[in-house]
Image (tube, rainbow, N blue to C red; front, side, top):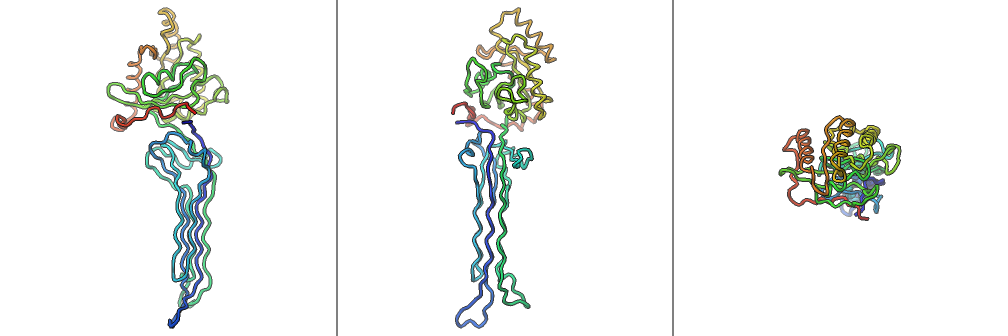
Amino acid sequence: MKFLDEAKVYIRSGDGGAGAVSFRREKFIEFGGPDGGDGGRGGDVWVEAVNGLNTLIDFRFQQHFKAGIGVHGMGRNRTGANGASVTLKVPVGTQILEEDNETLIVDLTKEGQRYRLAAGGNGGFGNAYFKSSTNQAPDWANPGLPGIEKTIWLRLKLIADAGLVGLPNAGKSTFLATVTRARPKIANYPFTTLHPNLGVATIDGREFVLADIPGLIEGAHEGVGIGDRFLGHVERTRVLLHLVSAQEEKVGKAYKTVKHELEAYGGGLEDKAEIVALSQIDVLDEKELKKKAKELEKACGQKPYLISAPIGLGMTDVLRALRDVILRETDVTALPDRSIGIEDDVADDED
């Protein structure tokens, strides 16, 4: 399944039905009069966050959503039927924006959350509505009000507890694959990960969701490489795990490069809790490892964790550190129970 985190769609609510102009004319009925019914109301356009979706790929195949129109009123005081409403079903974490792609309409962060994007037009009054003691035979009715049409943007920001950031080939996908059941693409070349991936990690009986995004390089905020468009998927996390590869010649510079891109992006990422780890340490001897660990500690201002995902070295300690930060920043009871029916590989790289 291909991952898609942004889509542009056109929506239109239904027009209201027109009121009817009708008069009662029946044999042997002495008193007639107006009996035109009201028009039906046009359908609404709704958006709803649902469980089981993790991409906006459905909106690649359908970009137009139109609600039903209201049926016109009829004689004998018959009111027209209301138009059918339509509902756009999106993953939890989807933002709805105006056509300028900047003005936020609604942020759907909870399952079952609904929002009316466009209200249907009201139906017009039939001539029976206008009957009065001074006007007993009105020969006019209201037309229905038109619906609302607009173009909107859907932007998905994944819901996760912790996010993985770092340069390409920092070992983020390997880390994710080691601690969760997710199976991201792993290879020895830059930008192996082209789409975000999610997985559920477990440590000491406690579970939390990890998000892995494509690597950042210098100038990403200006569009270099893949750019920083996927950073939105770690905006909602409570902690970032910053991985720096031990194969980097200057680990301090590698850390500062990614840190600068996070600050340039904004979105609160620069102030988010951060845990730093020196990854892929199995390729270094003891002397070189101490040297690079000291250099990284000087650059980030904290003692980095030393890990190697392929051999499982240091993984338990860093997972516990992530868990502690997550529990510290949220109520323990607020963490969802993901122990049953978990689908970890929710955003793979298969086309």
